Image: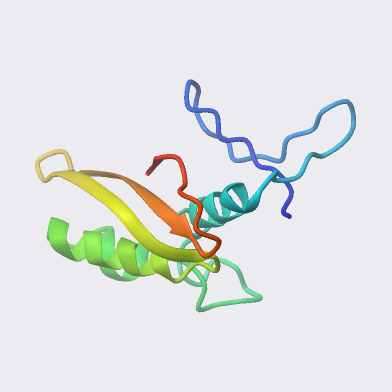
Length: 123
């Protein structure tokens, strides 16, 4: 179990802790735990967490500010997703890259090590 972070799809995601009546709910099942860990991993810059410098995505080192290809970014993110504890495999992965606007987005689903399939995760 992990403390539950806000992940509403109909409003801007703050990824703040959720508090309900003064309490802090936790993730409800293995799929929620793994999904939340994937979100955290993909939103953490490499070296951002000083207690674990190798943790995170090399956004600055290999993606942002570089003339990268969509296939390279896809490979980096898929590698990061698969490195999350509890992820057995990526079952679906789609992405789009608008080079003129320099916008990248992806959506995917993962199967957990317990065999459960996540909802679609969008980055």
